[in-house]
Amino acid sequence: MGYVLGIDQSTQGTKAILVDGNGKIVGRADRSHEQIVNEKGWVSHNLDEIYQNVLLVTQDVIHQTNIDKKEIKAIGISNQRETTAIWDRDGRALNYAIVWQCSRAKEIAKAVEPYAAMIKRKTGLKLSPYFSAAKMAWLLRNTEELKEKQTQDICLGTIDSWLIYRMTHGESFKTDYSNASRTQLFDIGALQWSKEICEYFSVPMQCLPEVVDSNALFGMTDLDGFLEEKIPIHSAAGDSHAALFGQGCHSSGMIKTTYGTGSSIMMNTGENCISSRHGLVTSLAWGIDGTVHYVLEGNINYTGAVITWLKDDMKLISSPAETEDAAKAANQKDSTVLVPAFSGLSAPYWDDNAKALLYGMTRMTGRNEIIKAALESIALQIQAVLAAMEKDSGMEIKELCVDGGPTKNAFLMQMQSNLASSAVAIAETEELSALGAAFLAGIGSGLYKREMLFGKENRRYFYPKMNEEVRNKKLENWRRAVRLTMNSKE
Image (cartoon, one colour):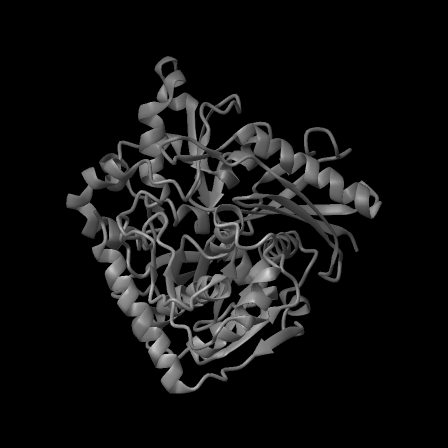
């Protein structure tokens, strides 16, 4: 029946999965790439390293599974969103990519503040340097080699566009609706690049990719000669959107959370485009066969990265696996709250200047209690987004579908269920972004039927157990700490 190759190019690294004709993962390979952080705190990625890693992980997973390369029928791509690339028409990177976490374009975003309301209305996104528009403007102003380039020779895009361009040797310069909707240059109602907004950011429209359905034919590739014949790249989607699809959240009101370096919480609102009044953004979930779905979304900068902070910076743990036992061993009455605003606060607060804070410690607060507060901070940030979603949509959240590495942590999952007062359903696989991209590609290429892939998923469930009084106290302590955080800007 053939195989589909799912590629997930994420913030920390790149993975490839091989999915068989029944939609089951039969192999996986991973490679990390360098996180380039300078003295100003700017975060960058080397585009050539990322592309080479894409080629290498695809080779790794095929060698590992020992399948006949001729049996691979299609490729799907999911990618870190908002991370922004600049290259020339020859496929040569002109600068490092600016990673989504990087706020170096803060002043550029500030300069277009007079148009913020119109930008929010058209793009669904609150004006922020974290989206691609300001990053593109920064690259255009600060890329040395552009002095010798004509505008028509420059390509600007998100990581999916860069990979597709390189994989097709420049024959295809495309992106999908989900990635386009995260640039802050795309009119999500008109479903086209906004000429006005591009002019505000001084981004030439001819530098931007063509926008197509998420399961469209993006081009043909032989993976730089690794395959004997070219096969179709038949999907591209932002990683969170691909995970939403992979989770089976295809109907209005269904919701998922991906726990990665940061977190994306998404509610599918179907063909209904809801403008948020409570600190969320509106994006396109995907376009499939000519029909688009919308989402309400809240993005959090520090979730899994909080655990990295405990390990690498605070030296409180030697591996993430230690956090569960430490949190369970902590004094459960300890009320310490961590607000991990290491690079400001994102949804639903949107305060770039907020500072991180440990609040409510006593003389008895120790290592275990701080670890517990760190895990709880992940669940509390997500709960704040869920509460905003219920207000915006008017729908009660009864089940939260979750995926990502931190979902292995039973303490965190139980806390999430307690704070959300809803069931938490953990996907059988962690690879929802890559799997969602593979499913989209398999459906687009005719290998899969949607009904054969969904409705039979095995999930692990957590249900609320916390006393309502205790829950309310935790939520109030969090809100109090956030208020202090947002006031501690000096």
